[in-house]
Image (cartoon, rainbow, N blue to C red; front, side, top):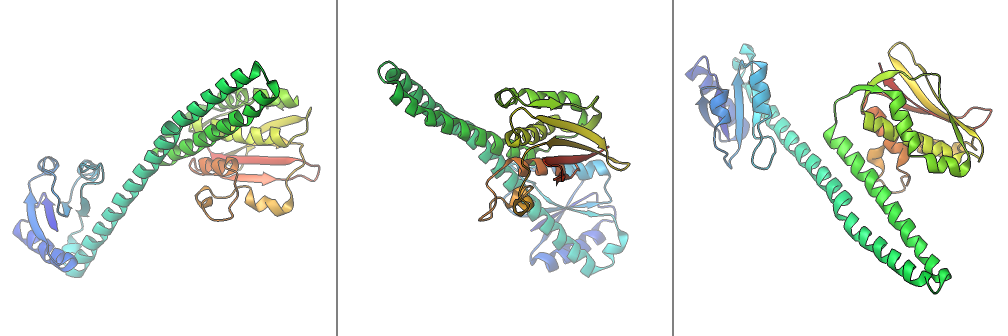
Length: 333
């Protein structure tokens, strides 16, 4: 272990105290003083373990050092901020602080690796699997065209190929979308909810026309703070579920209302069959538990729950005595 001390104001005394604590914490530890953060950031990459000890730094220095990456694009250094003079008078406290800083560093590197793994899986699933699916679809189209000229009944047997390919594409889209959402976490921004709702509704026009279902909107929509692409997915899933479980020729109602003083509630109300009581506890199943054996197969509502929670809100479902279902979510204002 090499401890790099940046901006050592008290000279040899601090260096000695950190060296003693470092040897206690890690068995072997060399100490080297670095003049400032600029010199540190220009240090060549090494293969042995390093920890940076920042002596009373400002916030800009802390940010620059913590954001430095190694050639694998992982956090480069363990970082300890030494801005409490009393810590220098407590050898055991300084030793414990060094160990804690190293544990945090190891956790940050593992978290960065996992995020990278998830992004790599999302890219491979979304990009690499589309090529073979495209080949299957193209071949099925050719077979259908050739058979259609002589035997329409046999040609229709290719339809399951198209349906299966489309199902796989939708599944890949959902998986890659969630992987990007979890790993990239875009910042919230002002969103005109009416535009998001209309965009989601347009994607459902075919289903609406097939079942002759109408969508009723409130008189107006508020502007909120959120992630527009996430909100469109939320509305698309909730409206899609309502359409799927509603009888033909009925109406699906969208609404919003105040929920206390610091939240707005948005929702979708349908007049479908509702959900059996035994299955209600499985509706908003935590997304991160879908890998557990015997977990629900559906992705839609777990995705809704995760996207809402990542924006600081919560989801809810109600089943009025008059019938139907109400799926809603809150967002902070």
